Length: 157
Length: 424
Image (tube, rainbow over all chains, first blue to last red; front, side, top):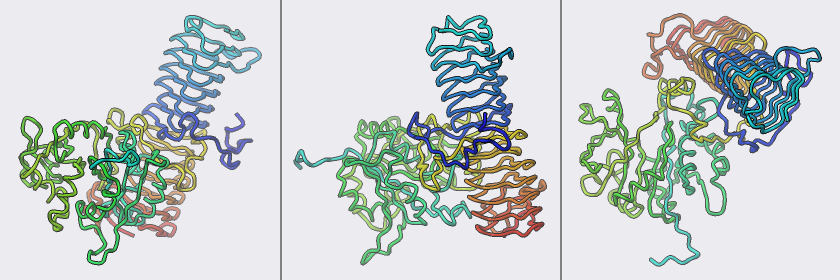
């Protein structure tokens, strides 16, 4: 989050940091696209993203899709996350290739110790799942284990 | 001829024609060839043809250039971006050569190929694909070559249906039931068909060499070589359905860019596997993610990496490194790399070439007078689009009307007024 804000502590534009653009074919993504109802505030978003919903105070890696009516706030979404329609993602770090099914709520509600929720790579979170804050979801789980309600602080292995 | 095992014969050689002047793109082609004009934020027009060639598995490419080729040559480089480098792969720039008897410039499409016969002879092949470097489309050329071989054609011409009111801009063909072209009319005033040539040809190599040797006054494929081939030999049409645009005019270039951000328009560079050379131009590829400020508003737009948006961007295509400062508004516009739109400035229906600076509170595209065409270039700018040349500076508080042209490097002092249709 130090990358964000009006006067960020990490001035990424000035530091001259490079990455390997061959990795995950970063080079070949097209410019990011924003739909008619999109709203992006105080965020870093890379090429290849398609934003139809709301993105606030977040960092989106290449190829992230945010559907209509979805809200992503205070979150970091790695490569190729797909946030379905009407999903709410708050204070969550999500590794690559995670899909949030329609109407999910992740990182809600705000909890006592208020640490971020972490989602491991290549998970498919079924529609309407509710995952609280400060949860840990291990990578590549059977989607059946991620249905219903996962309470604040729970770990799913 | 017996081919020794050490002698590598390529099935197909590609010649990409990138030498047209493209003068209708006005200030955008003052310092670059038309195929090198930026498109869709991250690309240049020629990237579509080059990527089609790459994605069709073809790897022997000659690019025929002549007009202001430097930026094009820099962009193509050694062809790494399209995997054209390696011992058996090649992209070669073919500029016009001054000969003892010929004058140097290419006189037409067929003349350009004729002047590069040595390239064709040096790369023996079964067929030659000839393409234009200034179209936006995706086509699997391998399928067209298959069709060419199945029909045992001497020449195959890619053709698509276009609206009848546009057909006068194209070569047109009438086909029989088997797809053989039986009649040809170049740019007809009274159309008898809606089948238009896309300027994409597959020739049997032997046939092409013979056709070019026939008569040196035959300088154009559409006007000379193809009509004669239809009369005498086997010419077939290869039907194409899909997105294809000639972006040779400001209006067409603007519309095709808007297609990038219009859902369902049928164009998707990323899905099409279009690549660009992102290493030239100050290492565009190494730019940071686009940064969106706390008060920004970005709707229906395409934004490239390295942009910084604190104002409003609506229905626009932004290349890398564009800054839109707080209170500024960019609408229905195409902004090339590294432009700056200062606080409270408005850019409405304009194309800004690279590194343009729009001063605080300035307005480009003021008023609703879209009818007054540009006085100097009435056929270039007549729908309200204004063109701002490379590295021009629009001073604070300037007001430009519509259909205006600002020459590259021009400097408008603060508060200057440019009326609709004027050129500075």
